[in-house]
Each structure stands twice: as C-alpha cells, then as structure tokens.
Amino acid sequence: MTIVESIKKRRSVRTFTGEPLSQEHRELIKQYISELQTPFGEKARIELISIHSNDKPIKLGTYGFIKGAKDYLALIFEEGAFTATAAGYMFEQLLLFCTGLGLGTCWLGGSFSRSDFKKQIQLKANEKLKIVSPVGYPSYKQNFLEKYFVNADKKHATRYPFGALFFDKDFGIPLIESAAGVYFTPLEMVRLAPSASNMQIWRVILDDKTLHFYKKPYYNFESNDIGIALCHFELTCKELGINGKFEVLKDFPKNDKEKIEYVISWVL
Image (cartoon, rainbow, N blue to C red; front, side, top):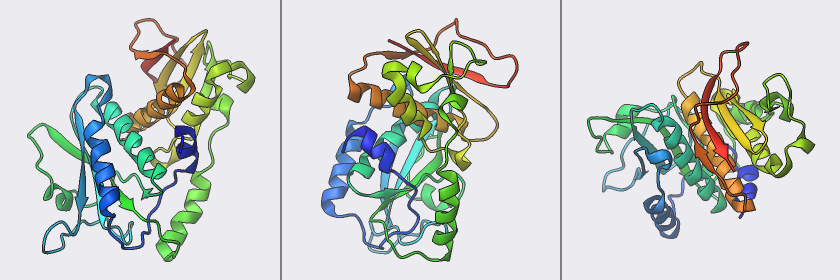
C-alpha cells in the first residue's frame, strides 16, 4: 500500500475483535519501530505494550472508549520546543504503516489512564507519556459507544476546503488547486490529516517553490497535530519524487489579522 493509499484509508478504530496481534504483525511493528528516526533531531520513542505480556493480564484503562484491544502503542517524548511536533510526525508514520498492514489504530490524547500505562513503561525523569493508540484487528460489531463515534466520525471526516487551509504567497489569497502544481497531492494529504477534535490547525503558504507551515494555537495537542501534517506532506513528497527539506527560516509571511504561529518551511 502506498503512502497516499494509507492516508486515504486510515480511520479511527475503537472496537477490536479481542484477538491479540499475531507474532508476525508484532515482529513487523517492532522492526519498523527500531528503524524509525525522530525527525528534526528531537528525542522521542514508541513502545508496543500487550495486556497479555505477563502471566497475569495487565490493566490498560481507556474509560470505555476502546473495546477489545489487546495491544497498544505508546508515544513517549521529552519536553522541548519542537519535540511534540517531531513525536507527532513519528507516531503518525507508524500508524500509517499499521494501516498498510490492515490494522486498526486510534489517536488517544485524553481518554486513557496514564497511571495504568506508566506502570508498563520505564519513563526517564524528563520524559512524558501523552499519546497512545490501540493497534489490532478491527471489529465490525458495533456497540452503542462505537455507533456514537461512527456517527461523530462522519462529521469529523469532513475537511475544510483546499483554499481555506492553503494560500498563495499571502494569507489573503486562497490557493486554488490548479495553482498548487506538483504540491497539490502532498497538500491534499495534509488536508486529510487527522487532528484532535478535527480542528485542522494547520495553514500553509505556497511562495514560489517554498512552502511555509503554520499552526493555530489554542489547545494541548496542536504541536502533535502539525507533526501529523508535516508527516503526511513529506512522506507524500518522497513517494512522488519531490525533493526538498524542512528548514526553520527567519523570513516568512506574517499574519497580523489572526493568531497563528509559524512552524517551519519546506525548501525545494
């Protein structure tokens, strides 16, 4: 499955069959984690946790939001100016890999018991556990809660139109799809990226061959969310053979009308 196919196929899965990951899938995920590198020189790591890893099943509470999951992925990262963004990038990269394996996942930032998960992870003094995801085989049997979330997800699946997120040289000029050139598909994959409460906090300005990425700050997970967007953009560019790199620039377009923060730029 290509990156573009994985992005389009990925959805939040909250009900699982109750079957633990096969040994093959566990090994594939562990191998992929061992090869992942946190972008931007930041420090983060991911652990695969099973509730049946010991003789006695362990408790990993999700307050009823997740049903039937036997395995979880935990994102651990240090506090830093750019660490949450880099961690979000890396975690989404892994979840897209799991999607390609036919597995279900779901970003969880607030609806899980941190104390339960922390008992299974050796955290260093400067490390934080803020994100987890179940990983396993999706169930098509829906309980009441799952039906509620499916209906909510249909609403959350809607995305802002292209011109509301992406701009042409200035925040006052919406970018039309035909003017995006080779960047249309990478930007469309950004548009499809998941975000907390589907807030879609990313904004991008295309300035000739350089793209400037911004975020709208107003809640706890915007840095993780912009990391997801950067992941979708860069992985799609690599898949399409568009060469470039992320750089933090001193000179970039400003927006004085709306509270928005510059994050990074993509330089061809």
